Length: 472
Image (cartoon, rainbow, N blue to C red; front, side, top):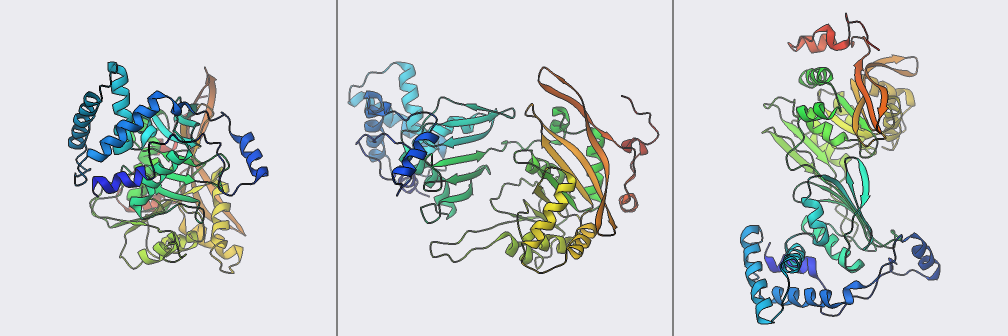
């Protein structure tokens, strides 16, 4: 993509005219809506941009855009950044603009972020301590650090400024956001997951939620060091993946399901063909033979939609050895279960739930969303024969993420799916607001151990707490 095309997507409509103060109203809002919006905006949006600094930034930025070579390759960031800096210094000199060194650096970084990055959000995205960025309108920006949410002293110039950044994110992916389609899922170039919602759906102005992912994927050693899981349970899960058991990773929003799915998928042997299916591609598999499929929303005419369910059905014709669905949310769950039951062992997915038992109830509900008139017992039989293991993860009150249950799905008793907890997190104390505890084995040996051993993997009984005295 040429530099001019990229700039037009991000800067569309910018001019020297100062922006009017925004109040977060969506288009078409009547007096009643305006009152609701006024109550919902936490901080009144003032207009500091009308001052000298904003005028200077706008003037320098517009002249810089006019003088840049449109044919420059924006993928060569270092080269483009040097060119921008040279022009920036030249413009300041020609217009006799005198700034202190900190002011000069600040002005240049803001202009460079507008042209090459995502404006005010760029420094937050480059901060490795931040895991999530949340924009609630132009003037309210929050971040998550170490599982806790904090407000940051960063703002956009206006709601129009937020909209330009949203357009910059979704346009290269062929997606759109407007009044007819006021929310969208997308991703950044580094794989970070993005959700955007605009008025009239959002009453506080355009909102943007960016789930960042580490530039270097989190490793097994790191999650053990973080206390999210124990070395013994990782050894057990590794054996389950290698012996082609079907695994569902469950948990609440932000509990670390995708991170754990990335880690477990790293245990898949490198000589197997893996098909990944996601709404916004974010899995970071390191194997060589991986085919990544991504769903597609409908176009402006309401046509061309490709759903997760469509992709799951199509993947069965692609000779997969493993199917990994980033998240099951609806009717595709039934197709995923059928795939697990028809020779595609070792498949994995994630689901939102509060506990392993709730996960089964959610799967039942999502299967019913497929629109087939199936009796509940038939669905439960599908689940009990397809799913071998549920790994449940939670975000604790101190912000840490921990695996709280590793549970085997053992079969059916009457109309009830039976389950056995193999590992359960035991909280022992809270010290200085930090949750203290450990994922402990229950002393029960899973029924599928013969399948693991037939794969040539032999786990010591001590992994399951067999033959050891429990310490309290």
